[in-house]
Amino acid sequence: MLPTALSWLSWSVADNFATTRIIGYKEGHLGAMMAGITVNKPIIKRRRVKANLEKVAVNEPVIKRRRVKDDLEKVRSYIQDVREKGEDRLLPERELAEAVGVTRSRLRGALKKLVGEEVIWREVGNGTYLGQRPLVGPGSGRKVELSELTNPQEVMEARLLLEPELARRAAMRARGEHITELELCMEKMSDLTNQSADWSFWDRRFHRAIGRAANNTLLLALLETIQANMDRGTWGELSEKLHHRSSSEGSMQDHLAILTPIKNRNSTAAYEAMRAHLLRVQNIYFGT
Image 1: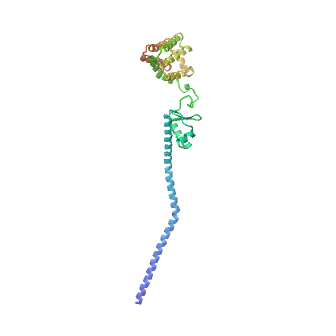
Image 2 (image 1 turned 90 degrees about the vertical axis):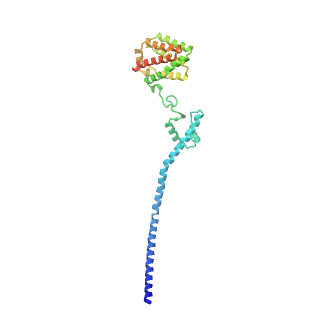
Image 3 (image 1 turned 180 degrees about the vertical axis):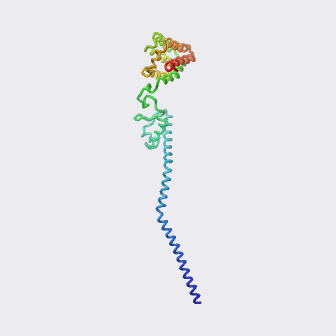
């Protein structure tokens, strides 16, 4: 019995020793793993921070676009209010920023966008206005005359669009003093040759009298603008072509053909006579 008991004891001790070693090994291995995780914590933190930064970086453009869109909507809404009040000028920048509820730098960005869309126009020292920048005059930003922005062909195109309509309206609206003025111009031109400066003066006065007879202030202003761009300095040798290639008799016939239907209240004939006259002049100038 003793040997058997000793054998069992020996085996039990050995078994416990092995189990202890296994457990110790596992605990040691787990400790090493935990230690490794502890060592890698800074790496994990850096990765987390990097992911957050990338997320913010992706969202920044989206946030900025939304902010710009909101600013634009605020300014557009304010402009609509100004337009409904019948006004055409915005407040100075500082006051406008407060009224809209944005910073001045963000306001400038919105205004720049609207200038590009021609919703408003701006001039340093003058202000911000609704609509498109005028072609000439105050606010145009140009220090040149209209004659420097146009050319003779454009002038004739404008005359063909405007003056036949003026003749048509003159036939319907002319009063006695208008007819008297037209007849005076015809009388003065008949005593002159079309190569004289005086003849050109009375010729323009004849066309302007038709504009006055049409009884439309804005159309008359357009006619005066056109006539202001018909001086010899702008047209150069083209002016000489008209005087050399057009006879006095032909010019007088054209003007009489215009005057007669105006006196007779024949608006269609007046329109056609003026158009035929201008087409003849255009052909002399440009051969078309």
